Amino acid sequence: MIIYVMSEGSKEEKLKHIFRIFDRDGSGSISQEEMTSIVTHLYHLIPERERGEVGTPEQFSQIIMNEMDKNKVR
Image 1 (tube, rainbow, N blue to C red):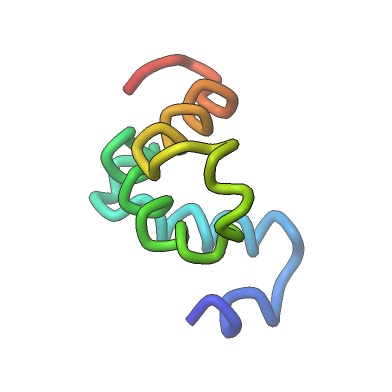
Image 2 (cartoon, rainbow, N blue to C red):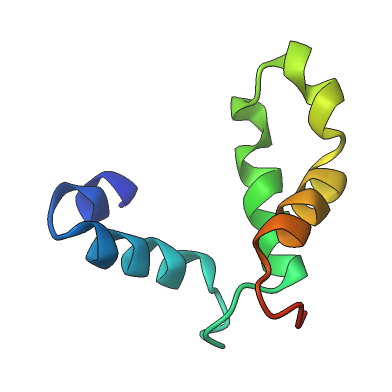
């Protein structure tokens, strides 16, 4: 599905599609729980030698939220 979404459209359109996939409840934002789910599902893609730097999926999702959450509403 991701390959299909990424194959067509502008950068903005692609980002909107990806966001919509990650926003599972359709609320218009990505919650801490949704971010943890995303990170948990993709965690195996992080090389083992680098996992110590990011911590557990829960810790890494918190790092991501701290960096990316513009309005700090969770």
